[in-house]
Image (cartoon, rainbow, N blue to C red; front, side):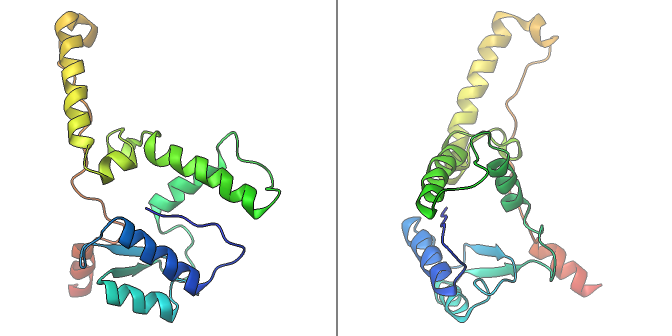
Length: 178
């Protein structure tokens, strides 16, 4: 939804980033939960007050755990393993320019296995079901033309997940009751 490259972390900068993303994507109150580490930026008063004002839930990693957000970790791994990722950036402007190209690719072109080989943009903007339907038509035509290619089984495009959680609130309620 949003990204930022800055010389250092800052609560006010995080607040601006979140406010801009929520406004740009017209996120209604009560729909969004932001998962973050327990760093000073994301636990700062400006961010805490903004999230409360916007009706955004908060979820934080366990203390001293750096890999508690699998979505961010997967995206960072893709970024770091990108063949074009430099050993060093010449300037912050170079880093921003690289990230602009990378995140455009990551969100609009890169197919993600966890979301049925759709792009994040397709899922976010609600076009994934239409794309899946088009894929099904293509597979049906391929099957009709040559069923032996598929060993007699009609192929289906991958299903889209119905929900994805980092910290499932139902599990947390169950754990607290135990």
